[in-house]
Image (cartoon, rainbow, N blue to C red):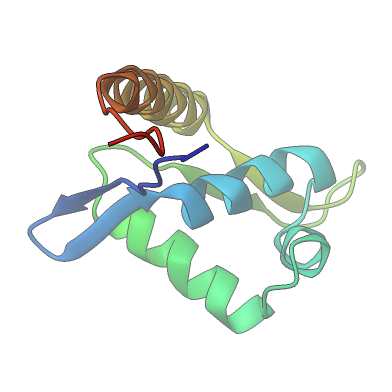
Length: 114
């Protein structure tokens, strides 16, 4: 049995805007409520995570991640509604790509019989 593999990412003029790793980081931020905890949870350095977030925000029409400092509820890092929509859009496109590739693989004649 064969399987087909592929990775997609979205690029802008300044390089990668969104890909699987960045989406994984955004989902971790939603779950953890902080960039440092999110980075730790996916085994990524804080420095790398910060660079990815900064890159996404710089290359986006609207902020994807915001940071709130202190206050009665404490601070934290949050994915904006726009960021959540970008996650959903990416996941939808990614799933359609996987569905397409799985369907294409069915057309291969890969039996051992020749």
